[in-house]
Image 1 (tube, rainbow, N blue to C red):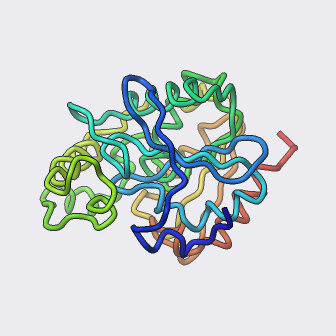
Image 2 (tube, one colour; image 1 turned 180 degrees about the horizontal axis):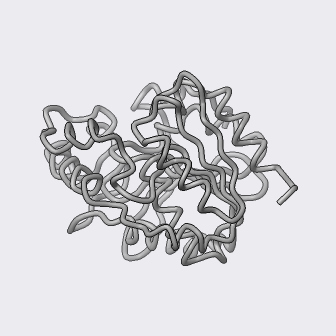
Length: 259
């Protein structure tokens, strides 16, 4: 399939996705391109479409695999609150189900946070990783973001959720609240967990990100084999604000040999 970002503009587009059973979850995923595996993990309250500027770029060089987590995109929700550790375990089960022994991976926001646990606890699965807008502790976000999040309410249903979710649009308010709770209380990783990661990691953030620069720098410094990139003129939405620049930086890291 010839792909460009406009493919994702219509919710009626014919999707090339499949379902696989992983951790007792019927998880939806899409695959593009050929070559060694590159897993891309979307952000919270988003779906595969949130990575539309990355998919066609990386599909020219890798076999790009994109799972959608419970309550997001085409994957049905599960009971209980979301926890990053459990999201990471689900991701490991997804890789096992597809017989992916080891892979490069990139995660955005929530998708980045789950990688930290995965890289620390399942090093056999992580060849190298990229964190875009990630944080290892909930206190790493700006106080203004935390203050706003505490009083934020769900006032409308995301159109992608309405188009894709098997749970129906009325369930969106519950998913929203579960994500809000997650962001207020997690992640809670200790620096020691980050220091225990052996895989090379690239930490990327926007210079106007809602993740504090001090936290991003501490995350980078804790890595044994780390790289750091601060994208100028970008917020937490840097993947769609500066796609050409961010993609180039990520590609350079993914193919770097000097580690």
